Image (cartoon, rainbow, N blue to C red; front, side, top):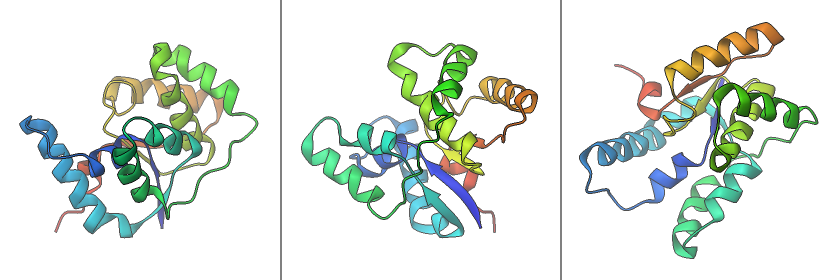
Length: 157
C-alpha cells in the first residue's frame, strides 16, 4: 500500500468553514472527497510538525483540525533531518515563515513517503520546486516523494 504524508493544509481545509472564494471552496471540496473516498487506498502518516501547526490559533478550530489527525501515526525525527532541512531551505529559497515546509518535505524524503499531500502550492506542490527536489535527491541518492494536492490523488473510474 502506498504511503501519504499529511501536511498541515490538509486538516486545515477539512476543518475550515466553506470558503466564499470559489477556487478555495473547490479545493476544500476536493479535500473532503479525497478524505471520505480515497484515503483508504493509502497508509497515512503525519508528524509533530503537522500537529504543532494544527494546534495553533483559535482553540475550537485547532480542535477540529487535530481531530482529523488523531488516528494517523507520527513519523519519527531522524538525526539527519536538520541537515536536509537546511539544504531544502537554501534550495527552495524559503522565507523564515516557511521553514517548517522544509521539515515536512525532509520527513517525506527520509521516510520514503510515496506522496506528500498539501495545498501549499507556493513552497511545496510546485512543479519548478519538484524538479529542483528531484535533481537534488538524485544527486544525493535520496528518495523523491511526489508532492501533490488531493485532487491529484483521486482515482479515476
